[in-house]
Image 1 (cartoon, rainbow, N blue to C red):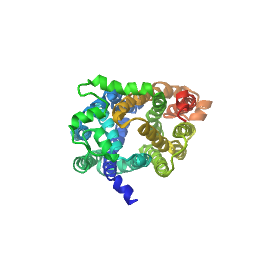
Image 2: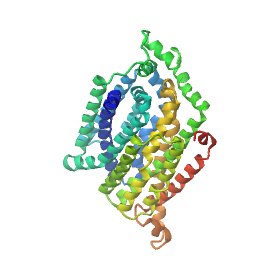
Image 3: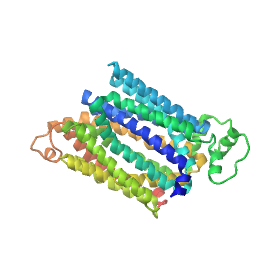
Length: 448
């Protein structure tokens, strides 16, 4: 154990401080979602918060890896975190002055999404560089564990802080967590300028006294004078030559669309039928489930087929939570659905992470992860938009017009929120179909 902690010391510092910062950001996001929905009553307006965050992320991600490969990764992470903090300060100032409008949040979320686009591949590569290969599954499980704790604590802490001190205190806590993560990264975590050189060092190789910038570019497979598009295209070319990885990304893209429809409809259904405490309880159950799954992912032995685990975990998730939310009439059933639907997601994520890190060369990961962010996540804003639009314009009006004693009302309830419940049923059918179709794709089955 002591040897493990010693080998993972830098990763642990980065993991803990970044997780602390994520907690602060998630609390602010949770509070603002409730603020927007209570003020507008619109699922679409609430979903646009996430859409604005993801739109620049999806559009620019394909180039972000090239930027990350060109720049010092630690500098990229520090600059992007600082810009995100400035956006939070802007929200705080507008809120205190009484001038905060939902349009301001859309703009600031879009700017935050742009910074996250650039930061993400640098952060992913940094984790790879700080982690010996034998610990990939363990550290992936640890990251899932922290994400689960954040999911559990976010609604509890956010609700408590808002009740006692207001939303301004939530934002102030967010800025405090940013400061802790920023200073730790700045002073406690050394990262190399060149991924290639560091990879040699972590693997036990001898450092060579050469020009760091030039050697880093050569190790990354990029010529010093290579343009941004040529560098970005290298990630695309890699996926074209490795169709198993490509189809796994497309599989996750389809799942992300269904999951985003679910995320857009969830606040609309629960806040319409109950209140923010119940929404917090369901989100807490999601966190508890992912916490249990993360612990399992951290300590379980490597499976015989990681790809089979990925497919089975997603199929189980799609077959449970959506239907429990659709047909369940009480918060208890919604919470059970959340527990079942998210229990195996960390195990899926851990195995997916290991497949990517062990298959994609370190020198290519920044660019390939950036292409992945575009391919795998472009469906998230689409899913949020479709989910919000379908709730507001299709399913809620439809359910408002059906007879109160009809079969649809018996299945999904009546009144505001019943349309969102109907949409969960449709999302469950769609999710099952996606899993069954993609598990039969030959490039995915070849990886079994």
